[in-house]
Amino acid sequence: AQTVTQSQPEMSVQEAETVTLSCTYDTSESDYYLFWYKQPPSRQMILVIRQEAYKQQNATENRFSVNFQKAAKSFSLKISDSQLGDAAMYFCAYRSRYSGGGADGLTFGKGTHLIIQP
Amino acid sequence: DVKVTQSSRYLVKRTGEKVFLECVQDMDHENMFWYRQDPGLGLRLIYFSYDVKMKEKGDIPEGYSVSREKKERFSLILESASTNQTSMYLCASSLGDRTTNEKLFFGSGTQLSVL
Image (cartoon, rainbow over all chains, first blue to last red; front, side, top):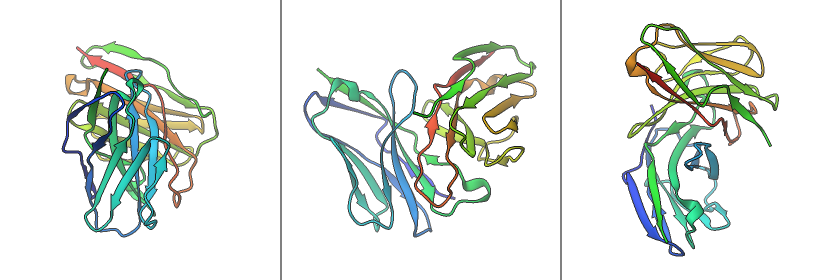
């Protein structure tokens, strides 16, 4: 079974600075997808960014980018120019490319609570 | 935008009660999921469904059952609620193509307290 590890329960950053959230995963598969989800106090989970394992190029979405290291099984999220609205829980998630049986959902890490200091 | 609606934001029940958590999505999605979220444990998959009347166990199905009689509605059932089922329950849906990196759309969650 796949596992996703987020080693930072909480991170704090000054507004306008850059922060990196860590995520590692364990899998024997070669083809899969990785995601970062954000959960603000409203509790609504929002997709921030996603990466296909077969793509070498790191995904970017405006101020959000990832550092995908397939050999190291690492998938970190970098937030540039942090804003107060970025304060939330961030979850890293894994999904097999060819899912079936009990593996069709995402496997989530335990989350990192990001605090933005004004 | 896809809307996933969970019927209750907060729910308080007593031990032994039968509890129904309802979830409705409005975009004709094939897949629907129930997760529970606990502090320090992240999200864990309880059950999912990829078609009407179809269901699959997730990682922690014990103590739960589900029902999907219509495509848009996916219900989570606690047959006899226990205090260890106090948690945040999140419903999600996705379009249904298993070979793509399709995203999940989530509801706003139901915070269930079992006393």
